[in-house]
Length: 385
Image (tube, rainbow, N blue to C red):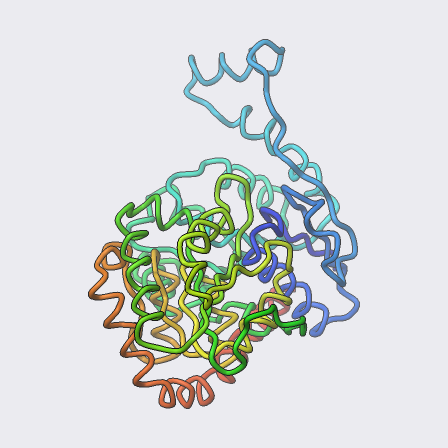
């Protein structure tokens, strides 16, 4: 059996890397004879991922309006309101791989959170037209994200694997019968030990992750985050480790965190972690922290799965659903609107500190179940074949 993991954006997003690493690991652990290939939009960033049989570079084809293809595309769009020629041209590198594979895993579960994207539907349609199995791996989708075309696309799949219970309930309510509840594979990701940077306090360092995505959606959130950091410096003895997790140009955590570092460097208790570690190395550092505060979901998953009490600067259904599945409630998750309120941020931090031992105990009790749920994804996958 030949499996293609596709719609992977590249590993400069360490969350995407974590999804890819663990998907390949879980599939190979279940069936060592399976051929697992990957189609990546940025394959050069994925070269060190183990166990991949073939890594395909599948960047989008650029279409010039002055070319024959551009002319045909423009005519079809203008006179027939038909974008399929354009979409097939842009994603030809993926489409050309359809005949060579048996099962297709769309590992861009977040793709469904960002508005209408008909190119996804067209590629999926061609996969099903060819008689292949189609799976959405690790999906998170809010009710506000759904549309009739999107629901129809989801219903056309052989299997939709929801990584948290809120998405599962939403899709069930919309009549997506082929959905199964699992957990994000990144909960199972191993860690790699790395040297601790100078200034790290063993047992008393808190990780802090912030993203341009959050700042763009709520500009006042950065000021509130500054006030939270000042509160930590004023009321605790902890060192703060600024922790990037996405280094994609135009969406680079490290660039934002550099400003935090510059403004608080004089405190002598703030570190900026490097931007060139891979996902398992960042997890190695996060696992040694006392607490973690993060906007990037997979940075918080690295913390949760290492039994680190975590405050989530949430901006989507996935953050809320993951917390609910661990704690029974949306524990220590602040919405995109709440994170601009420094009083709420500080109150949530203080709550996390005061409940430190109980949070560790809850994580220790529940994370093993979450990891087992993540492994169910491959059981469901191989039931299709």
